Length: 393
Image (cartoon, rainbow, N blue to C red; front, side):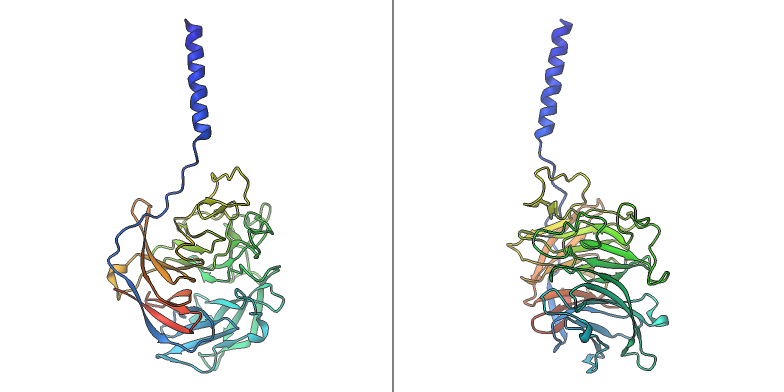
């Protein structure tokens, strides 16, 4: 009798193991659809720019907006007018022949009002990634001095696409650098999952120490043993635009997809470095076609929002709205799509779930979002050369 009982128990355990073994891995908790009490429209601020790809401000109480032109110039909108002379012109250093090459962004040092430093990210004449520091002219606050250039970082690249290119200073004062996987379909270099490569990553460096920079001691591979010391996060395909929530420091990353899906990744403030966002094992929350049949998701951080190419073809990461003009939009993360000009609003709930809803279409080449000193949001129109303020009513 005891023998038969043991056999029955063994059979039951065998069945349970089989059920677990063949149960599909649960999908990530992606953003659910909700009702949003506002829509998005645009208000023209200035136009006449050549292939604008970024807009930002200096956080210096001047009210100026700075617009990056892909061929290699930074222009200023001041008191509603575009200053004729560029703030910085490095076109002779920039290769912009590829659709994803050029001067891609820049960032002001958090103490720009004191030291006048700005940092630019561009594709150099060899097609490699370059990050350099400049300083504002001593005689004119509307002009940077090209003679002050100092190259901080140069990363070789074999392909003209997937260049990332955004620079952002985090709440911790470190410079974060978005690096695409180096291009080519499906990550042929294996950059996304290779921690020793600077490609397919978010990098994090200390520009206030070292020469040309220092490595923050809490970077996940700071000792260089298991990865490049500059790496903060990996498993990214093309993190074209990302941002920190100015209210709490949370990091949102718009990672451009391959053939089927676009994604928004989320890095909560205070989370240690080293998150793996899955590329090229995953495309968004889906197993990528060229990945191993195992497609192990256990150690991956999957997106909080995604959409298929039925809705667009190239995600443009945005910002959490922290302005004052539109109270209904407070706390919503606004992001969009370059190809379709659709815009979504996503809210993080108290239980760490997300809700995302399409709130409009802007009918522009939505190359970038921007944020001014007061938290109001802007977008750039790649095709028609305009800069617009978002109206969220």
